[in-house]
Amino acid sequence: KVLDASTLSFGTRVRWFGICFVAGILCSFLGTALLWLPKGIKLFAVFYTLGNIAALASTCFLMGPLKQLKAMFDPKRLVATIVMLLCLILTLCAVFWWNKKGLAMLFCILQFLAMTWYSLSYIPFAR
Image (cartoon, rainbow, N blue to C red):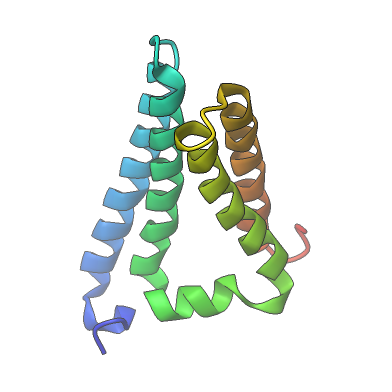
């Protein structure tokens, strides 16, 4: 029952959705602002990825984690989900393990496109 969204009041779920969503936007903007620092690509990649993860987490408060996971891995959005999660991971790999700034930037762009594709998969006929 802990993983069920119904254990929280509607007001609490909406409040935490808003907090996570705003935190995600702030992380993305902060990452973009930090991009111009000498080692800014690492900070950008981390904050941009954290922003996207926070945005994903925000919907857990509205739907509940189990319902969201079921929706994410529904056959009609399975490919979008896999590409999105892969881009999140590859961004961090490029910046921390492979130390490839250009590749990290490419994966951030792909991350944006994958998140857009994933988000559109929830809108009927938008795919």
